[in-house]
Image (cartoon, rainbow, N blue to C red; front, top):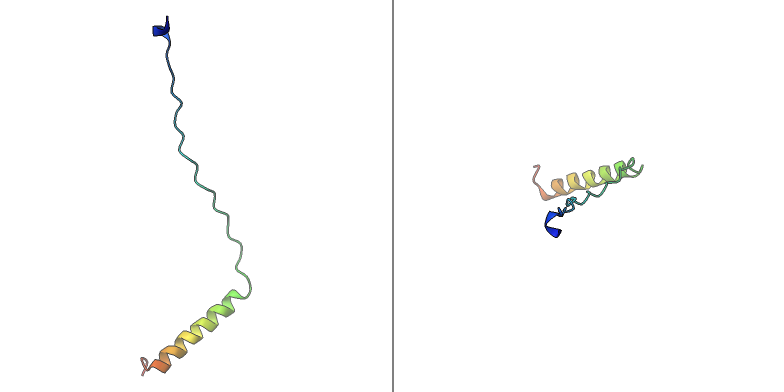
Length: 52
């Protein structure tokens, strides 16, 4: 009797990728920090004598 029973296997599901949270707009201070960092890099290059 048990020979006539069809055994089903569960289909293995791939784990779902975590959902990335959408990034909001940048804070207002970020551009100023970028400008200061750029100024410091330019100053450092000038002081090292690479620009002449």
